Amino acid sequence: MQIDGSIGEGGGQVLRTALTLSALTGQPVEIVHIRAGRPNPGLQPQHLTAVQAAAAICQARVEGAELGSQTLRFWPQSPPVPGTYTFDVAEIAGRGSAGAVGLVFQTVFLPLALAPGESQLTLRGGTHVPWAPSVDYLREVFLPTVARMGLEVEMDLVAWGFYPAGGGEVRVRIRGRSGPLTPIALTDRGDVRRVWGRGVVSNLPAHIPQRMVDRARNLLARAGLKADLQPLVVRGAGPGAGIFLFVQYEHARAGFTAYGRKGLPADQVAQMACQDLLAHHETGAPVDPHLADQLLLPMALAAGTSRLFTSAVTRHLLTNIAVVQAFLPAQITVDGEEGKSGTVTVIPAS
Image (tube, rainbow, N blue to C red; front, side, top):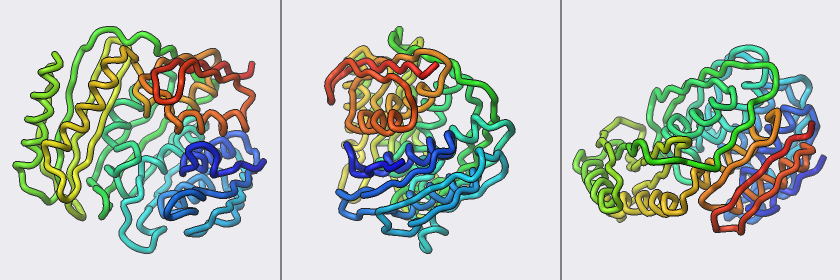
């Protein structure tokens, strides 16, 4: 099967979803034009680590697995094998790298979770970096949600790794299972039960996370949301700053993140995350835009119809749908326009 890596959003998600589904189905795949429209096209360290991780769990034969490559051929040689694995983005890069360990995790998570046996993963690289799910988001939003579908995963943050230095470490325990996943319906969120989060800095003064949480607390209070926010100073391989906000509704969770950078005041970092949270909250949708994208694959593998209502249909989500439908005979419909709230329905093949 050939997948065009430049379709839709055209980023690394096309590669990761194709690798996941190739490992799960045993279908060999050729991915061309990988990240062709990006300023740094082709495989970057975190993408190459995802390739090597996917290959390791199904003993795949691979061609084109090198930095900068825009074409990859991937032949699984066995069903996914549970076990103990270590994947280090910095080792792949040959230098320190903040390549996101969350994206490597997403590539191998489902194949190992649907294999008969337990797996232990050690992932090293960037734990909190832009344009990727943070470890906080995975632990507070994604994993509790997929647990409702029958997926049991524990994730421990051993060392923080902010962009650009990386140097973080995560340990993951995945309890494999046999049999299909339980369908999920996330269309009604119910009332707010809790809003919480933390402002975190690495190798920076303690007043910065305090300013972030104070600003966020005040902005959310104005909107009628009482938030339990904590400042935290951690050690890391380099400086970094971010704020991580979460909201628990009766029937769903959502998460929002903003990262600091040189020249960006802490107050503005907090404001960015709060704006995203409040924009989501005002739609009445239970599922945030990132979770909608991340739930698509488990929904397509469930034993029955799943449905979610998201605050924004993203290009990322629509691209992911195209890749899933190339591999699986699932019926996926989107009721809503890109950039606006909408409902996604997934009916797996019987």
